[in-house]
Length: 180
Image 1 (cartoon, rainbow, N blue to C red):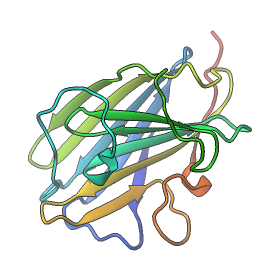
Image 2 (cartoon, rainbow, N blue to C red; image 1 turned 90 degrees about the vertical axis):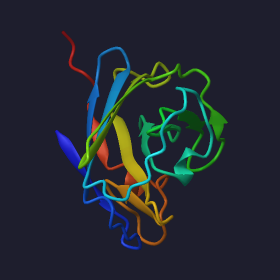
Image 3 (cartoon, rainbow, N blue to C red; image 1 turned 60 degrees about the vertical axis):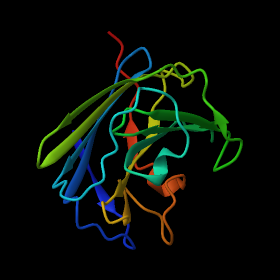
Image 4 (cartoon, rainbow, N blue to C red; image 1 turned 30 degrees about the vertical axis):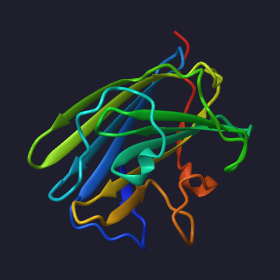
């Protein structure tokens, strides 16, 4: 099922008209994230780098996922840029204990674009989360326009300023996969 991301109330975006995300989870800890951006107009889409880890991808157009397994407070943050650069971080609880998630291998990232749309598909192997438990996800996107304006999109936003790490953003529950 596709999930619609909403712009933060303080964000203005004239370039993108809609962002949706599709998520699926496999039995062995695999996670597939598929983002659809339509009406790309003046979206700044960085291109041309190699599939490498990079920090601060959130400063430009990128797609993000925050994944945790309650009742623990630890979670992962993943960033995927249209350049195919990516990042993976682990947190011990809300914005604390941040560390590069070196246990996460290079994800498979596929891109598809046209004049009206852009798609990014990322496939991850998540051995660090319990495969038999439900996972909570926060899905988000940062959209930079060619004029430098940035908008922030998510499944849900907490009151106040943009904060994708906030518990209110973890609005999607992925149940544990059923046993064969």
